[in-house]
Image (cartoon, rainbow, N blue to C red; front, side, top):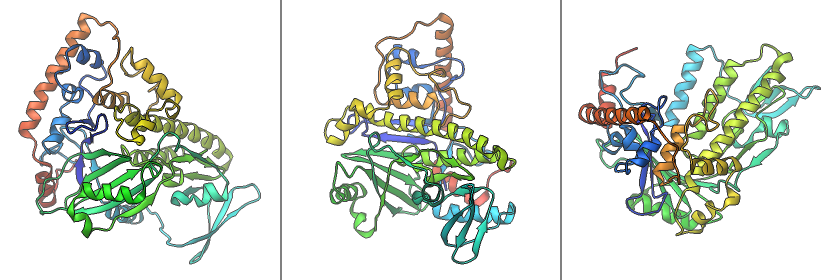
Length: 436
């Protein structure tokens, strides 16, 4: 694993060489007290919005870690998440669950889903261990959605009219040197018909090209991907992964709830699939029905919350495309067509022309997938500007100036004191971190 502090988006706005912005994991300074957007807009925008309101863009640009070796576990000077080797993380979770949490893990191939007279799932027939009965089934069967989709007949809501990418090429690229720097952000680079992700781990990079097969052939996409990787691409084998952007019409029916790919998938932008899986698992755990009698009530609440979250993720992902000024390919031209933009996002973009996003723009849920701050970073990173700004007071001006100064001081301190990402990972491997 390595630390991740956000995403860098290159080429999404104009496609020019210097076209890039950061979506960091830190909130703007004083976010709960004052909206810094109008003050930044009035101040002449001598810095990018990200640099003006938080230090994290600078940290990522310099390849720095979010903490030091003396910082306790799960704490940091800057907010962070992780880049993980999924092939190693899944067995790690399995071991933890079976050895520490009392989970019984049965490896078996499901051959049939057996329903009761009420329409509930009664059991799963497997090839190796026979029937496995249950009271509640969590469908984690991936894109096939064997339980919720096929057995219970829940339909699929296609979103390819909004999000065009339907194919991914993925490859693992070893580092050329064992001590190569490890970027502390995901690099997302726009191309003619989609974008590449580039994620650095201690021993390799995970790289993929997500594209629209309606706008580029598979052969041309592979050529574009090969140019991005460079000469080493000839030594590697890329996997082609079909994507059907969309989600189930509902996510919990009868005694079955879908999580992960069985619930749906859009595209791997902004780690949205991982976030949804975590939030769904948490919601199931917290709302676990006491008995079958109340399960339908819990299911209705789960469907309402989860449906809202899918809608907000679709809005946020589309935001990255609809703000582009690129006209060099049909993919980017089609992405700004009004009929491809969800109504809620169209309304918010109109509103934000006159008042910058903050807490009250329908970001009113306890656990928003992407808060208003995320919209600010993307909007103003991609050059969105309002026609008018609300008035402010001397109090808010003084507060904004104070937070801007505080951010400048914090940035200088972090740049001077934080280690490089590679160096911290190496030290953790050698010495560990202070336990909480």
